[in-house]
Image (cartoon, rainbow, N blue to C red):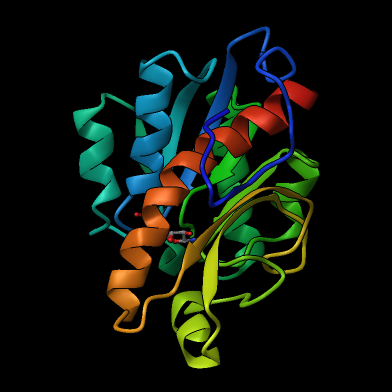
Length: 211
Ligand code: GRF
């Protein structure tokens, strides 16, 4: 476990965090995919005993697709515009994950609201990352919300997913101070540095408890 002055983390030992077997992950992402890449690199470096079996992305132009190709990770595009309902999209997601033998799901910047379909297939096995210290600043524009609220610190959270948006059990959080001249972009850049660390630690915590 990395020691950082800004990390708020459960005090688990390396032994408690060990994952016995290689866990099959499915990742869902909508955008740039820097968190997706952080997970893939941690796996390649032997920091996480897991394998990303497939990436599902919903936006044909998402940069995450290029990252997956470079990392030789299979991808499936499920464009939400092709599905009449959220439920139908989630049914397709579950089907892809099941074909690939996925055991745990990570939402790494998935910008769609999920339904019970996904949670029924993966109960307590869906992980999300959000750019705030939950339960503050749920939903979209969390970074802008923190700036508008004029709080002095914000950060990021890795949590289990339930049906309520940005809810569910918190696995790990990291705090990021807000500087006087921060813009949404500069603040988000610093939050992402922490995200890339805690997404890996959050996954480790979840898998080592329940893989
Ligand atoms: C992250 O800030 C994450 O917290 C939020 O969406 C962003 C995704 O970033 N849910 P990236 O695509 O992983 O770079």
